Length: 470
Ligand code: MSP
Image 1 (cartoon, rainbow, N blue to C red):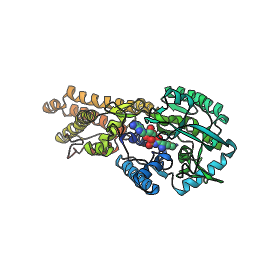
Image 2 (image 1 turned 135 degrees about the vertical axis):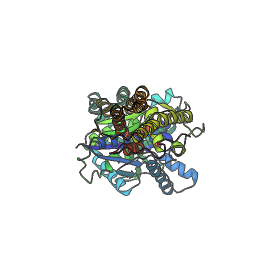
Image 3 (image 1 turned 30 degrees about the vertical axis):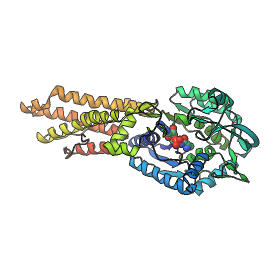
Image 4 (image 1 turned 120 degrees about the horizontal axis):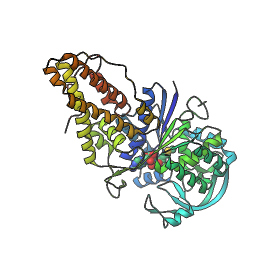
């Protein structure tokens, strides 16, 4: 039994969840459930990123004390994760005293790689990072992601000497000791690494009060990413406890927009601490709404709770794990979502289960259940984090089972009184469904459990449709 530790990016607490936030949670949850399915011992972290300019500014704008604001938002994210049917084992808030204490210890351990200098640069609060001169010029002084002019910061800060680790990070990425997925993103990260300067990792308290104090210097607080990245290990108790049972992480799930922090600063921090690197950084694409980036100003932000309420949590997970590609940007539209629900879940899967179970019952056929064998091709896709492809693979089997019913027309066997043939046919189909439901367990756990309960020792047709049409 392998020990598997899985992490999710911790969202900023400057707003409420949107559908994009579901991606890290759902993908990591699939990973966790898959590993449990194959017998591994799994730990999974989730949490909330609660420091930084962005959050402080938003709370000030709303006239709410910052702590109260992050408390409220963090609770909303916890509820959201529960609504997604996502099961984590550990939850970290970056304002937890334990986390803050551990981050300060981490800072001290890295002190040989930290120096103080005056910096003048262009900052984007939306990204919570400095733009390079090249980016600043190429973008005409305006952050393309947030559509806001970069702000000029000139202040005395602490720096983290990324240059101490560049060669080792490059080697780790090239040798795939740190596997970056999708693989074409590794090249982008290597290019960014080459041009990456040392990173400013603190800000004067006068500019930013909402952060973890720098140990031994009352005038400075830590840069939010320094504090946030450390969550993956502070939640395990580092440096106060031995984390070797769980670290390195098997997979860290992040959006492509924050892969750069995880491919450069994070490995440098870990190397500075003498810790191993995560085995894989799995970066997913962005969820678009009607072909556009979601934004409050465009007014196209999709509320995930509304999506869950429309057809239930399994339908949400199904859509976001299959029709939102695991790696590429993909589009959410209500029409696509409704079509996937009606055509695929209700017709392909729901009807199949209903029709088959009804035939078992009606003709009093005994179900001879085989041991489930998870297919090699499925395993290979799951091990490579190709989750949308794994779902396509399972769905092909769903289609094949439907085709088999249409071709073999078991009801004609019943009419002709060929009960042995009928039993063989239904049993093959029933075992096929059990295989499908088992492989769907990580994706749509509650529907998969319901299907497995229908095809248990006896076959009990569902009293209500699994996916009622609306
Ligand atoms: N706080 C940082 C993460 C720190 S991890 C040590 C952050 N927060 S975020 O709220 O902006 O994003 C949280 C996660 O949600 C990231 O993985 C990000 O890529 C993801 N997404 C945010 N918007 C998204 C979409 N529209 N689509 C898909 N994922 C998106 O970055």
